[in-house]
Length: 269
Length: 326
Image (cartoon, rainbow over all chains, first blue to last red; front, top):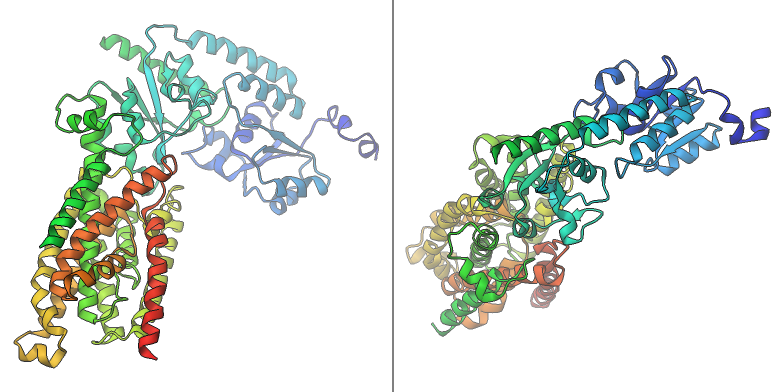
């Protein structure tokens, strides 16, 4: 009764004990920071090895389908969701009196400490979060590549989509010592980079999006002969995997892989 | 002959324009020189590996669809018989989608045109069975609607069931057709089947001419109707199947082009065949230039443009047919 009268402010002091996550990235932040037994369910995607960077830890918990009905029946006292989670679901849960904490997707490496702190505060685990932030920042500093010249890299996904400078993927490239060619054609936020334009940019390196199961014609452009005809371009293959998706300390794995690639290019020169 | 020279000149001019339209800001001269240079520079790669196969495919697909339309109309003696409208293209797309989604094309690339061809054969045979030898408009169109709807629904179903998150977006491509970012792989995949189709349809020209006098007269002139029907089924299916396998279902080419040219060739099916091939090539080249010039950033689909031109004409033809029947 007191909690109802005081509104959201009162929740901060009360540590949630039954936490349900309905978003792939909040699943991982939750798994990293929650006390044992605090997180009781993760989203279904967390159990998919292609998407989830923490699949072993996630499989210890039951998965939910992220629908309001299913989540409510788990009787949570906190639901972790993304800002892109269906707003009808979020509203429904809030109307039912459940606290829902929303996490925006990370658009840069700076968002990683911010999300860790937000999750720490939501779970009442701020000390653990601060510890993890300190470790993340130290690791990040140790991995940063300062070699010059910086090779011009292109991120190339299905349907000719690319990520621009204002994206987590582009930050991963930058820390590993690469420049993103998308900014040369004004795609700061990312968008469609037509095959012809990509070829004309003649990047030093093309990094492709991950391979999805099954077939789609939309994936044809990824192995178009025109890309192979660029003699000075290194085809790095499919590198952007599950470690690139979420703003968690897992991105350090992605940075490590890109850093190894950058150092191997240096060795070949 | 004057018409032939005119159409060839039109195709040649449109071919050059097609080669020089796209995302890259290079002068026409520069681009055309880069077409022949073997230096691995970006502009040469764009011209040789992206633009050239695209323009070639436009010619091949346009010729195939134009010729297939003229042949079907000649055989059924009905100006509404068009591969896209009567579900042949849709069935070919279903065949292609099945070949891709089962993973068959990974091990055996020719499975793509072969599966599309099988889908097309099935549809042509069904149409001939349902519409009967004379191809009365009403039964032809009704059979076409049914086959198109079924093929479209099954294509959507197969793509929606795919584990690949991008497969559902492919539905638009298969229904509307596009030449964006096709390569020489696709040219070599389609060309043998199209050449077979062109040859068979060309061989059926004399039979189609004779058929204008009626089936009895044609038989009296020594035309083997069963053989003619078989050549037409395989020829049309090869043309439409190969075109659809690499570019999706591009509709209305086989309707608009023969309709525009029929007056110039004196309504003789044999002349209309080659004229429609050239006219179809010009039409698809022009449409593919338009999709790049109107909305360069948006990958507008070929079929959208063809439908905007073709559908009003189709309605006009239905109206005319109705008046004739009345």
